[in-house]
Length: 210
Image 1 (cartoon, rainbow, N blue to C red):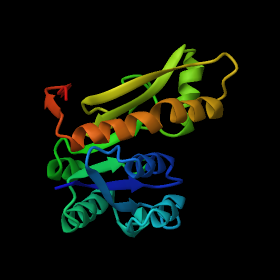
Image 2: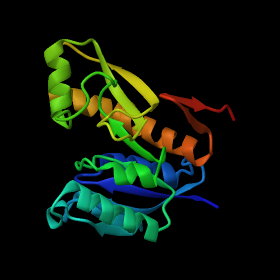
Image 3: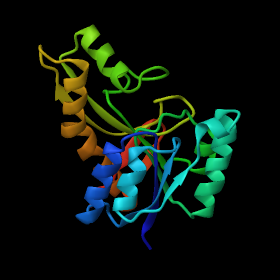
Image 4: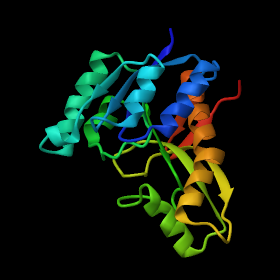
């Protein structure tokens, strides 16, 4: 039985593409992406899904009166699709506790910084890299974590550091963190989940050796 994965997106879907590429190489640990769900109609990520033969669905944020109403509708859809693992890949909606309650330690997110630095409400997209450069850090990177009720506050699965260069702009740092960290870490973390090798003790994610 393969692990049925839904990837939630809002935009271009570069992390989705990294997952699709890993799946095509047989590197998702027996997992299969069976749905891509976008919070925005017309997101390029939906085209990526279509090209890969993965069904795409749209749950437009604007169609719901609140994040909670959208979360409830999302959980219904995920259950209808018999999803085992939910992956947030550049999804710009802050979901409410109904999602975590329905999928405890089975919702994963990738964040473009080394949590707990530069994370939480307001830290998304280029804002994260602007903050890192503004602080003058020498290392940034990416974090894959389980989603909890606290924004960017769930147990950490994997992290990878990326050196910050003196001539970096938010754009160059964003690109390098994607290429060197996000696109590698996220498929690896998904594979570990699908292989049943992750367990959570308090705030710590334990990774069982093969």
